[in-house]
Length: 486
Image 1 (cartoon, rainbow, N blue to C red):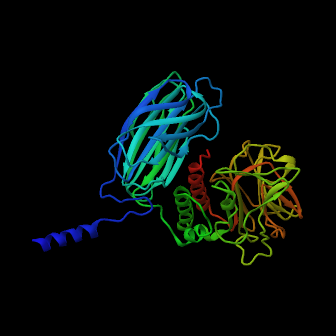
Image 2 (tube, one colour):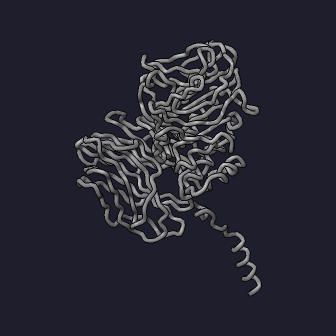
Image 3 (cartoon, rainbow, N blue to C red):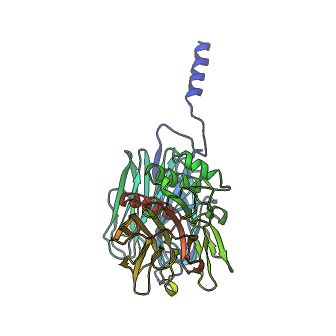
């Protein structure tokens, strides 16, 4: 009998999985909305006292979905910090970045102890309408693996055994709901806020969740985050890149793994010479070329381009401040960027007319050797060049977003904005410019001209198909949303 007990104990020990990276796998993960609240008190510090947070568990994550509004519409409010039981929380996603009149956001923290806690939200200026829902997650990885934002609707890819949580709002006191999700709490909260809080367990691999707010009027905002029961996938390419970084949090690490391994799975990774993610933790990480230790980004100028964490670099025009790459396609060893197969892309965060007709990014030697982007020229057109001998334009009054010029053949050029092809032309290719490529400006026969864009990423490489570009934009969109970039 005693031997049987020992054998049973040994089998149970072998069956108990070990914790890793803050994750203790459980046979039945749970995700439960525990408590919700609304307050119309006005102030910069809003405290929800003694909120239920669920049963204590060493692997419990507390997630707070929050919608807030400043009915004065001063445009100065911003949620700057949250805590649960004195534990600082991390923002998973925010529908809008910067100061606003209202917003929808999701915050989270590992919170193993206690069954109730004060939840404190701190704002830059006073708000007077806030709704929250408090979720207890057990058996999930601490950091979300994906996030996204939308106005009237939001879509996000997912895999099996994942969980979606959403916060949504409208600036009106009219009943509101989210489709394709369980609406756990939906309530008016003051004259100018209706907050919705929703969840959805997800099953099946390579699926897409699309949720639409109803009604779609009165400044709708949606923030969505996805948690997984297993860590973000890894691959050799992500491991190689992460080995060149230091001090990254789990959220950044998971984000890079999802981005890089996703691009590998999409068949895009090998098509890059350069891929910079400027919207990241710090300058050391922002300057790394994700695909290679060659061609690091070098902020150049006096003063240097200004860096803001999770936003990127802002250049200047006179004095010139820009990003040097060291990449000269005509002399690089086995470049992906060649005469009849090439692309250049850049993600800008600000909307402005290109100063003095300068490229947002690129290189040019005369009219027959041009590669670059006019995200918004003075005639309110976007111009796309990839080893071009002439102009290819599309009407555009907004330079914010992801712009990509693509050369797919000797007489085939395409322009993309935010993953969608907006223009194509039979523009003939010219030879590859034999000068250095730069971002946040242009290199004109060796004369550098900076521009005043704030840029979150940049890339150079071979031609991308329309499917490639849609996938590329989708991967970037997930990264930007996790950084709070709309």
